Image (tube, rainbow, N blue to C red; front, side):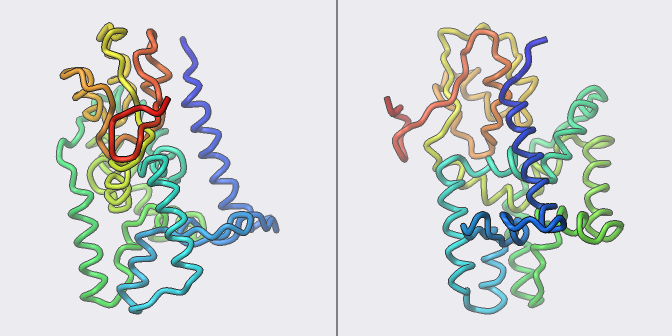
Length: 263
């Protein structure tokens, strides 16, 4: 069986992120804070939706929070918004682990994508109630609460997400419901980093679709011959690139807002 180097690399990054999150408990100071707002080697980072929530609740933003938000937006705007989902998110890491079993159990997937609807509702509730409603469904908040408070609401919600994906609907959270994934899918449409499709090499064996967590993002390429994956839900996980036996898929860098490759 061919070893997918992209999957190995992604697992290494995910484990490194979990190590960073746990590092303050061991007295390490390279990473301080959470994925909501943190300092990594002195570089300020803050979750864009958590930042927006603070703005809605207080009407103002501290300069470090704004700088951290802009840094994160620039990073994921460059690499592809849902790179966060595929390479960084702790909830995404756990749903990755149950995905193979859910596939063997032939669990269906939801065609509808409600992430942006959930996002708008959560931000609306934040305004109406004056409470941080987004944190309830933030994958960062869920993961941090589960790690920090143990058998509390965060852990219960995390277990519920995994059970739904394993027993009822495959990838329901990441594909259809996660509000942060909704925001990052918009950024993903702007990213110059994309999966490139070479129709002249493709044998239509279906290997790429079988490993893709959101296989519909590949359909315009496989069915209509589109040269690049443009769907914002592509997480740039590299699974399709690594599994293709004829190198019909690879990563490319395009000029901003075009499909023209940078040579």
